[in-house]
Image (cartoon, rainbow, N blue to C red; front, side, top):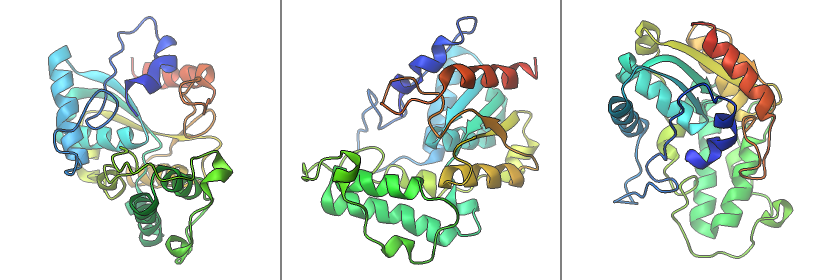
Length: 252
């Protein structure tokens, strides 16, 4: 997700200077070498350059894959961030069923490469909406019919979607540097959606928080709880912003 996904949330903080950006490979940020997906460490260096340019340290809200990249940033450049709110980082490697979860994520990529966007996105939805631990054979199960989700059934031939083409593989296989995170001066807060605790990203949030010796902070709604109408997956952005402000101001 690029800057366009944070318009609604940013509108609830008129008293703060808000900086958003497009991670490399998303929206206006085009990869020079599309076949060489960036890693969380690459994204961390990009974030570091942005923060250097605007003058840090900053308070940072990041969600999903961005939350993984933000954890890599704090581990690598802890002086950049005062408070990090990492909302639902998808980190299957920290789960007890990590092998099955990672295999499920890889199966999504394989479906996309084989059958295109509609099939890949339908399979992605099936994985991220699964409740509880993944059975050992989950990755071997066929993905759902894309028509069930209003997705195109025809293969358009494209294989450069930033979510499905392999760019996300480095994010989902990342394991946070717990020693670096706990040693950092940054206050790290792991957020989890009230409605998504039993899904993949909810479970990884709880597990990541436990690795850091804390409980996750609950935020309203689901994985996209901060969204307005940007992508047709609206959450509860006003209530989400209230909780985010409370978390940020707890250190001020």
